[in-house]
Image (cartoon, rainbow, N blue to C red):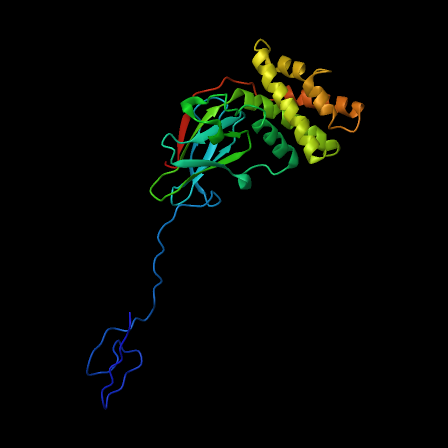
Length: 274
C-alpha cells in the first residue's frame, strides 16, 4: 500500500502516532508488515512424514508402519513385518510410489540384494499383478525397507496398495543371507556382486515355481546344494572354494530361522488418514 504524506503548515507529526499530521487524517501507518501467506503445496518427498498413522496389518506376516505430513499428500510405509510386499499406486492412480532411501537400509549387502530381487523377473511385464497394475508401477519392499507415496496436488490424500509376495520374500531371504556372508569376508566388486546375486535370484524364482512340493528348509537346501546354479554363482563371489563352502553353510543355517513363506494375497489399501 502506498502512503501519501500530507504537509500542513504549522503542524508536525508525532512520533508513534497512527496518523501523519494532526489536522488531516490519512491512512493508518502499519506498525508491522506481514508477509503474504504462501499457498499450500504438495510435498516433494516423504522426509517430513512424521505424523504417525495406524499400521497396515491386513494379513499375517505383514506390518507396514505408516506416517504422513500435515498436507496429507505423502504416505510413508516402512515394512516392519517379516515378509516382503509389493506396493503399487492407489486405485485412483492419484499417488505415485517411489523408493524411500532415507528410511531404508544403506549397507551394500542389502542394497545389492534388493537390486537383484527387483530385476530377477518378479516384476516382468509378463507377470500380471492384481488390479491390472503394470509391473513398471510396482515396487518390491522387503522387511526393513520403506516406500513413499506422493500426490501431485493439495486436496488429494495420498494412498497406496500392497500385497504379500511369496517369491520376493524367498529371494530376499536367500540373497540377503548370501550377501551378508560375502561382505563378511570381502565385499566383491560391484558388478560381480550384482551379477552373482541376480543369477541366484533367478534360480530361486524358477525353483519355487517348479518344486511346490518342498517345505521351506527343503527348498533352501535344494537351492544351495553343491553344483546348483545358486551355489556356483555364489562361489564366484568368494576368494576360494573352501571359503565359499563355509559361507554357504552359514547362510543355510540362517535360512533355517527365517519366517515361513506364505502365499500371495490380493491388494489391500493404505491411506494417509486415521
